[in-house]
View 1 (cartoon, rainbow, N blue to C red):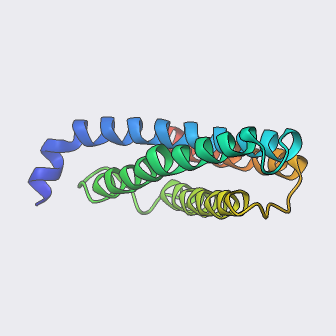
View 2 (cartoon, rainbow, N blue to C red):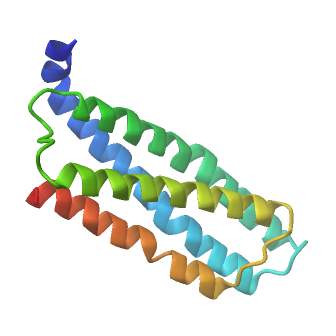
Length: 149
């Protein structure tokens, strides 16, 4: 099995990067949609219905598949011999950040359901503030992997 992972390494790495980019695009965009939805859209209007469709499609068609692919290809990289130095700190900082990013993804999914039911309780300002979290996590992830501190 390890021989297969070693031979697939360049493909796995490329697919992991593509998956991460797609996931992050959604992670950055969905909270922005929530900001506009919370601040500028009258509940029950045509625009409200449009935002609900956009939010659902972004989550279901882009973010969920991309997050699953990111996890699959990331775990394949973890199990590829010689890729991860478990005596270093970086795999643990990256892992903790990925778990936090996954939590954020699920938090967004719950907020989408709130909007879908017409029960959003959060202000646009809260979504703006929460939108900073994935940026910080992305910085930790990239610096962990590139600098391997």
